[in-house]
Amino acid sequence: MNKPGNNLYYLTWNPQEVDNQFYCTTVGSQVCEPNGVYPVSQDHPEKFNFTLRGRILEDYQLVYIVNGEGWFESLSCPKTKVKAGDMMVLFPGERHNYRPDENVGWHEYWIGFHADGQAEEIISKLFSRKDPVLRLGLDDRLIFIYNTIISLAHFERKGSQEAIAGWLKALAHQVYYDKINYDTLHKKHNQTVLDAQILIREHLEEHISPNEVAQRLGVSYSLLREQFRTVTGVSMANYSFQQRLNKAKNLLSSTNKSIKEISYAVGYNSISRFCCFFKEHVGITASEYRANSIKEK
Image (cartoon, rainbow, N blue to C red; front, side, top):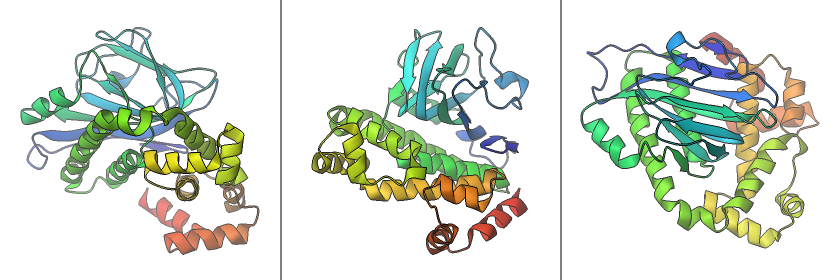
């Protein structure tokens, strides 16, 4: 099930085909704008819907916030602030509640999955009910895995559950890696780099340079450049490029915005320049990309 601007899927599975340790029940992403209604989509099945008292799920979920802020609470965890770069781990049978700050909003990714046997042992080593909000920082590798699983769920072809199970295991172990390395890679410089990532994401239409990012944050450009690469593994210029391309793809596939509007939204005042940029890095034109997306839905 999919609506413009959001991607949410509830999957079926065949016990004879899925990995008995892991199988995916739901995956998606959504953006809640400031002062917006949450959950954004009202298409969730009844057992996934929130009430004033929260909800209890039958399976696990990993909810990753990539922009904005809000709060989380559960039976085992008091009300806790959540911000961009944090992940909430939802445990089966555990009442929980979470929402974005109504004045800020947020952008979230989530995946729900059933785990059994050995998978339960792995999860117990990775996550704790008493400490379900993980400080991971913004990691494009996590976002890539979420988007890959979303694309597999979109088609839900034969064997997709097995493929998703592989990516799900990769996601869990990448989360573990980010968790144990957070202090080393992020703590010292995290806030500055996180602010830079958010600034780039929120102002793609301005096409601001790395030097201007440093100026807006009031920090040394050379120091920020070094910190940014240390924490994220890529340069600010490459990060900005990837975000611009990802946003263009998302707008083409999930909205009815014109190519002119999309070119402005990702920092191109010239449609021809945007079209050249898109074709050079995707291999097909923006119009062809949109047409292919429509055919696949």
